[in-house]
Image 1 (cartoon, rainbow, N blue to C red):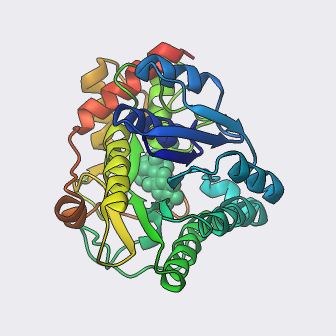
Image 2: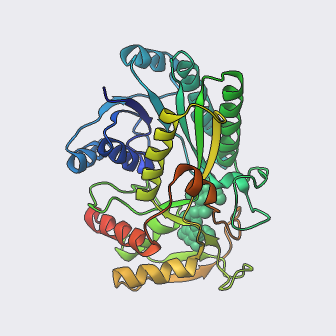
Length: 340
Ligand code: UFG
């Protein structure tokens, strides 16, 4: 029998790539998505790549009764990967209650149902945002958690604590939080990719939309940071690598017999690149000249963040395979496919 995995937010950016990787690995997938930041077309993209259409339930996880009905309909779920969440930092500052409701109530409802299962396995989408500006680089999992810069970041910190407490109280639970650094890129087939709503807040979708002519120019937020070229440094990781890491983490939960029942892993490449380096790499792979100007710093940005990936390398046996250039090339192919 194939294991059946619930992927919440499975039509979103990282979720959809993970669904592909899971199906290719032989898992059966049920997706829950409320389509608030995704589209049903993604289901078609997943089907094109894997020749399999995952089961799909259009459901808002804040609706506790509907969540209960879901678990009655699908009593045979063997694990949950929980991507569904709101993720716009600025929006979370303006509407914190929406973020706490969307990102925490939903997590609690899922964990409550998971408790009733024989082998509760859970993977949580966390973020390097929990480290804030780390005192030491690269950042290891034992770096202190800094006070969150935004309600969004706080939901990731609190989310991790909720899972940790649950695992402590219920030893039969097996859970992993994955702290993503900066996910970029798309499936090489360009059948699925990132679909930002409105003006992109993140660097790479803004770059590709500018290159295709949808935006006039990229604003580089600050060039007076204490870094070699003055722009901020991040660890950009290909979404294909992230997707693979979820499969490996899930298989770890299936194989687990001993050791701690709650673990945390950084998912990054281990390499930091500045904003200007990303622009240069993009120009190289795309052959396009990117219009940009230097603008003021953006509030809340940390100077530099990149992962120490030793723990994921050694304990998950996972490491990022794709280069920054490959990730940018795939993002550009995707943008060209969807157009302006
Ligand atoms: N940047 C620009 N211009 C833009 C967009 C971004 O110069 O138009 C710069 C930012 O200042 C930053 C870098 O590009 O230096 C990366 O910015 P992103 O917004 O792509 O990514 P962040 O590192 O800011 O965001 C990530 C995650 C969030 C998380 C946040 C917390 O995407 O989910 O870290 O710091 F909340």
